[in-house]
Length: 288
Length: 286
Image 1 (cartoon, chains in turn brown, cyan):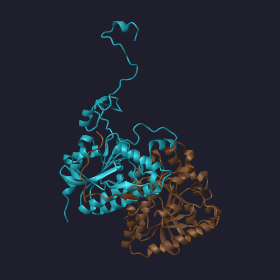
Image 2: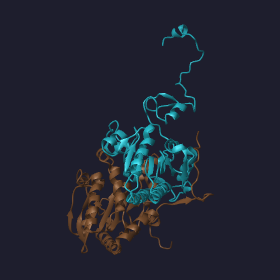
Image 3: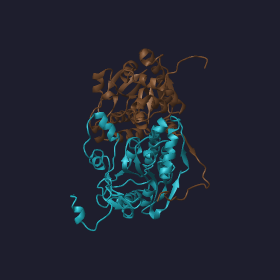
Image 4: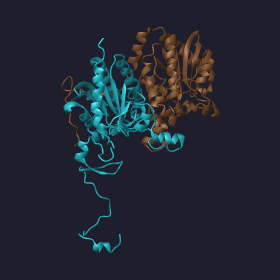
């Protein structure tokens, strides 16, 4: 407590994670990968510009890259739907993960979305099914998967491309089960209580490291990634290189076992002792 | 009615209450869809389906269990798991919610899981209760579902889960979200062993639970008239700034869009599950 370093509040981090000048998936793609070739379409319905995918080279290693694709300005954001994918985005991501498995390329996934898009077409084409399937099949993909949360980790829409062997997170990125605004609207019937909700939800990288939901925090320049984009990209590159090497050196069976065990352990609850071991007889409903 | 009618009518009543007809508590229930007043005992006998319009009332977890297991015999598993305020979430709001829900439902958590028989077949069965914080999934629900798939994998038995849920529970933050990954990880192993997972979607089944195991059933059955989808209708309306068409995200809608295998009335649910298990049981054994 001697050093008077001002900690950013969770709500300030929410603002920084959504900052218009914050580096986006496309910035990392441009700066970290050689020969990026974008691949389009889910082969089922369409191509989703809110989720970008392709192949490239990271430090002499071929990789498959997927990521939420926010825009830098209003025009870009409108065409990319503010980084909120439709089912075809998730299905494209799954297609590319399967490609990575066949070609034996590691996958690098960049998370930066307010959430999966809540709209008519998204429901008609099975948004829940698309996300659910991606989460399920991610545990079967026999190739290393590295996940980097670079901005907003918006709930199921983030987790749809968020299962992997190592989960890295930028210092001021957030990852949450619900947006602070949405949470505040439900609990306090007032989205202006979002600041309070941001603290309650424990959505910062520091919180999530404590809960073993992420594996590593990537430091940001003072005040946030937008203050020094090059330094941020450098830090992300260093972290990706180190973690990629770590997971690529493991044999696939133990990699998949660890991928499983890591999420298997998540959850905090009390397991009360029962008087008799084994099954418990049926209880009648307490009502009526 | 004209005032003179008062005098011509007989028999005459001294007092006329201006309010709506009161429904005596515990005897009658009004159908929220067709407004028919239903005699509770008869409603019970009809598996809580309106005899006039076919509206399927929400069921408590134990009501559902007793409707589908043989001889009302069911062995609860992992009923000793208790939620804690792990984050903790803002000044004990969560603990209050848990207390209210426990008192209101008589349950420990939003799902009851265990083992029983359906049409003579041993199964692992999990049933959500919407009355418990909106049937939401957090650490305990995620753990119970995960274990259910693990028991199914271990014993080579079918797993049946009936959902009634609004998704991941925000009071446990990211711990809740990650239950989507945990349950699906266990489901993935169960599938690898050739397990049969029947997902039964009752009203409502949305968000985080739908975007994990519930949408990934080998066979997906919807109850008539349920709300099924990813985002809630109000969120969609706010996003697209227009009213949603009638029947959007209904069972019938998701059936039309290929998201569920069948819509099954409550009276046929048990026999339908039984028929599917019977076929699965007759698979090649090598």
